[in-house]
Length: 178
Length: 178
DNA sequence: TTGACCATGTAAGTTGTTACATGATTGG
DNA sequence: CCAATCATGTAACAACTTACATGGTCAA
Image (cartoon, rainbow over the protein chains, first blue to last red):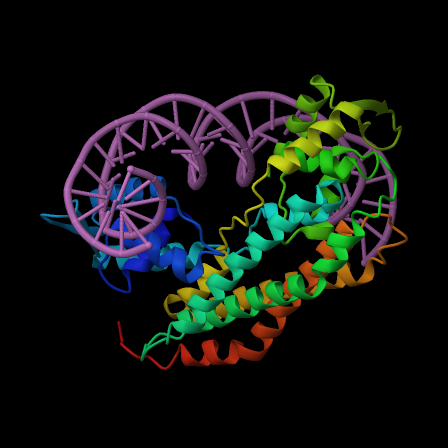
């Protein structure tokens, strides 16, 4: 799903700045939906030009000025069309799992570091998803998606915790002296 | 992780053609490591030119000729270096989860179709990972990675199975007539 | 004072996808 | 007969990342 559609999607829940959109996606579904600010700002500018969003500039004396975006009716329609067209495939390129597959080639310390980092990220995302109370929302999608994310993330976390010793230890019993 | 490194990684386990490499990654870790043949062939050609792999052309009377690649000693070194340099971050852009988050905007039939497809893919990948016996391998990495993948994939599958009714039903009780 | 947070934007560069090209065999 | 499998390769195009650019506030 391209950044444009993602921006429109976040805006269906209410007005936001580019900065907000990034944080929103990062905090909630950072493990599944990455966006860099270098792709958000151009996307918003394009959406504005096409009339799919409107924008109000807000002067802030102390902070940098911000641009608050709102989705328009045309934007809503375009968003739904894009959603329906989307094939909904799960396309992924996980460096982390590649590192696991080839763990035998990594120095043990590096492997430990990689696992620790991943666990820390998983913990943070799980904590965030559990904390957010899914307040009286009329939408069921976000709740379902959050539950799905939790299922996947806790599965990953528990597996790493339970099995890391095997790969961390197994690896330094030099099996080949290659 | 770029396609080059992925190709080198697969070749550490033995010789293979470009076609083999794609199948290998697809079958084992297709849910986490995508590669298109349009990126594999140029990558192999570049690796060959840099001396990181060697190549033997095999004439096949009935099938198209194939090029069997083998990793060289320089290739092994380059691979390990690339691995260690790799930050090992889990970078993802899942259209599927985006569709879940915005499920309320999808027609019910489309949502059902998306969930069915995802379940079919999950089942296929789980079946493959369970079937492969991880035969007397000296490496622990692939086994650990496969276990990790299984934990994540079964977590996803079970969650969808157990909760899909909620989102499929909840969605058509028109809450807003928007 | 040092880093994190707020806030936006541009541009060069990398990377990868999709589609075009070709073509025989085999199983349903 | 049609679809899938085997097998490689190129090129146009789309997309995103990274780094550059700027700069005030606030907490440790």
